[in-house]
Amino acid sequence: MQVETVIAHTITDDIRQKGHQSIRLTADGFSVLVADASFIPVYLKDFIFDAPVAGHIVAEECRRILREQGLTRFDGEIILISDSQAATLVPDRFFDEEQKDLLLGSVNEIREDDLILSRRLKNRSEHIIYSVPPYIHKLSELYQREVRILHTGECMVSLSDQVSASLHQRGFVLIEVQKKKMEILIIRGDTIILSNRYLLNEPFDYLYHTLNTFKQLQLDREKVPLYFAGQYDEEQEPDRLMKKYIRKIAPVPYFLEGLTKRQKLQFLILSEATRCA
Image (cartoon, rainbow, N blue to C red; front, side):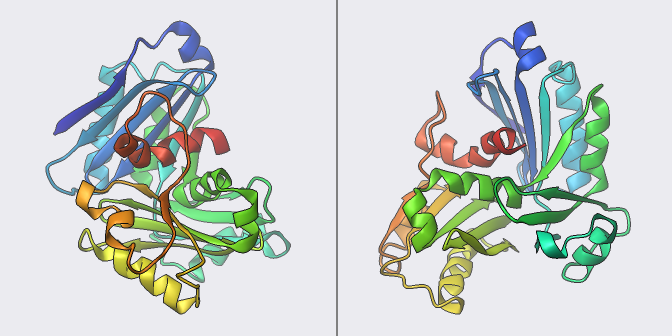
């Protein structure tokens, strides 16, 4: 396993008491971010396997690293991020906490041992219902305090607030791509039109899903802008590959202290999770 150390400042007792810690597991590893009370990153490392592995193996290695580096001794805010395929948005008027398993199961395949959670989106009139694999839930047991488990879909909605209010009215598309998975969010009239996710067999598959979404929803590729975040090789970024198909393409406007453009795009969801928890 490779380790990319992006930021490695001292985690003081004050940060352990008042800071923010977020952890995201992906198909080829996991990343850990610790920020101080003002959300300034002080520790950010990416742990990468040579090839995609099963989720429970990633979780076991994550458990070992968290213990070895003393990150389980944390009394501030702690967030785990699930990017499970089983997730759906339900308008408030149709949401019933006691029926959340049934609501999610009606549109997604749920594994028998999955934990089903729900949260109301901030400043929105929807709840998100999502499944959490048991290996992510078990990670939360490492800590002595409450651990919140969020879904990437909720983080995407929160991340969309970085886009100007005028575009929330006119409409835009937001994608976030990682190894083997992507999230896509469409907002128009300040309403969530689509929140979806896809498995990626090949790195360039995100291009097909993005362009197909534009086609299926009849979005004007000359007028509707596309914002992107996530992990890309330099030659695979959307503003390089899709500029002849979509006129307006740009990275999500976001400030994250001490990171390069590539690093910032890769870890936006990890950072945003602490802001929408």
